[in-house]
Amino acid sequence: MRCKQRFERMTIINIDREPVELYKILKFEGLVASGGEAKMAITGGFVAVNGEIETRKRRKIVDGDTITFSDTIFQIRLAQR
Image (cartoon, rainbow, N blue to C red; front, side, top):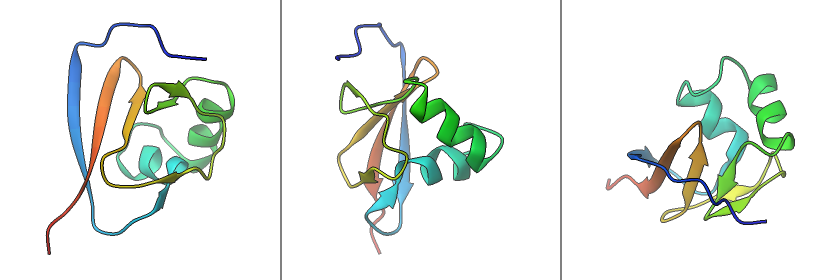
């Protein structure tokens, strides 16, 4: 299922290693209050990765992926060392 909603905001999230599990990004970026809330949002179908609804909590996120959550698109970038 493709995500068809329009999103106005884009935010860059820098990660220092890859891959990172999807629920951890939501939690550590403060997009949800806890890991449990992150897992519920994902399994509930409220998160898309690269334009596709994602229900796997431990989906591996890498440089270049996009996460759509709460009317915002988050671009994942691997931080330069």
